[in-house]
Length: 169
Image (cartoon, rainbow, N blue to C red):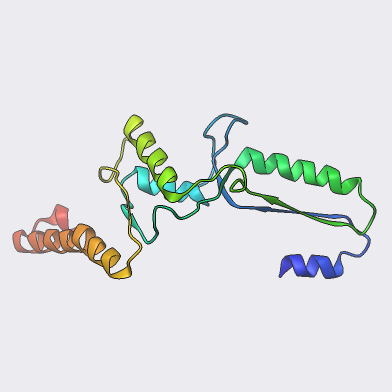
């Protein structure tokens, strides 16, 4: 809606729009792996590495178009300069994506995240990191119940039966 509004109402202004795919931490600038947010793929990466997420409704071959933050920044700068040199009332849209040149999928992403988690363990890992793509709704619900729901109910029952105040917190 914002783009349509800009296209309709930009008048004589030059407008540069950049449409990034899923943004991940920096490739090189200011340093490899830098990120100041858990937005986009950062939250998923963190949750997988700390053992908070083990199952997601997806399939391994699913395309996963990631682009490093510093690449997006460079595309924004380049598109701004290009648009500034265009005639007035120009609207330029640039797509910041990598799938056209660098095919990437969920399997490649999870392999990288799991390898990284094994090489550099988090101090406060909730559980051992592992990941399973689960495309079926019923199977996903069953796996989540068996690994999260049931153990939580068992621990809660034990806490109530033993009146363990630490466990009840």
